[in-house]
Length: 140
Image 1 (cartoon, rainbow, N blue to C red):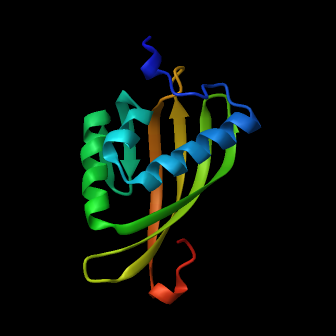
Image 2 (tube, rainbow, N blue to C red; image 1 turned 90 degrees about the vertical axis):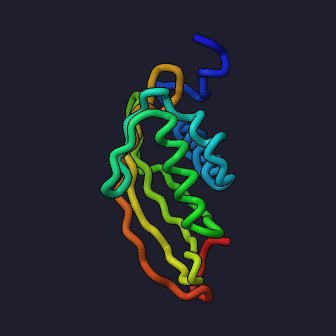
């Protein structure tokens, strides 16, 4: 395995390394850089995001590119909900606005499964959007 393919920390996770992994994911997603973010996932990663089924790192990259073209001024906060061995449950919320200026807060839960090298091989996300006014934003 090439060194660049290893994404520390690797499973099995401890409380400390699970919290570190979640923070690293939050930080990466907040860059809004599909090229960078997609490297955290295996080449054959499997996702369910809302009603979309995404397979492979290249599809993830295209999905994220489209997402951040639509979800403007995106800001995300993740929280570890639980973990065991190579799996984690995470809750999150993020805020964004569309081209028309309507703000949203999106809430959700993710189930993550990691390969031995620390890359995520499965991500299943359930997400709901709440329209908000800009003055009600919590994340900046």
